[in-house]
Image 1 (cartoon, one colour):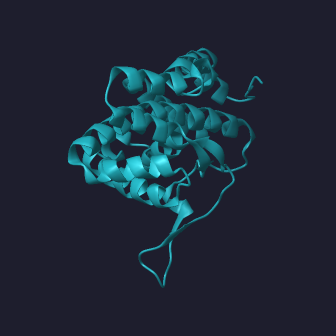
Image 2 (image 1 turned 90 degrees about the vertical axis):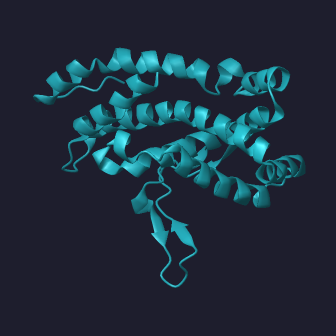
Image 3 (image 1 turned 30 degrees about the vertical axis):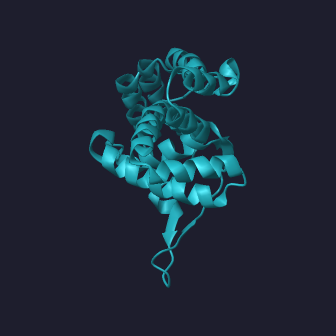
Length: 217
């Protein structure tokens, strides 16, 4: 559907060259991330199994797993429970659905930047990413009903060499998933600029989400 603006914002939209940009990025993502073009990631997983180490294959399996995702895990949607400092509660599941686990994690990392969207400053560094991933994997291992996956995840967490290989691969793929996050929310913002009654500069937010894509591709 074509988004048409009736005011000066149309000039800003034209400068974004949005249609060509979005379709070009979608085409790249189709082949760079899990999609029907690659068996929803199975080709990437099989390539890792035959060409590199098992930790790399496990990392891809883990990220490409389809699970229920929040998809909008910004700080405002994470509540710290007053009477229990070790627990948090997620709210606002408007965008919740099944998705690749990798998207949800990468999207959460992008949300570290808030609406200011200064990703160079606020996107978590490698050390913080690895800390988050280790905590996430430990919880996922407890919850999964896949006994083989559980065994491999626990082994990876307890073996430094495997953990380094696994976490490095995770971070590389999260960079790709971050592109999908930027593209999704940037396009969302353009649509909101047309239809939302909220007083917010959605087009500027769209620009801030689209800019990092060029750095990551």
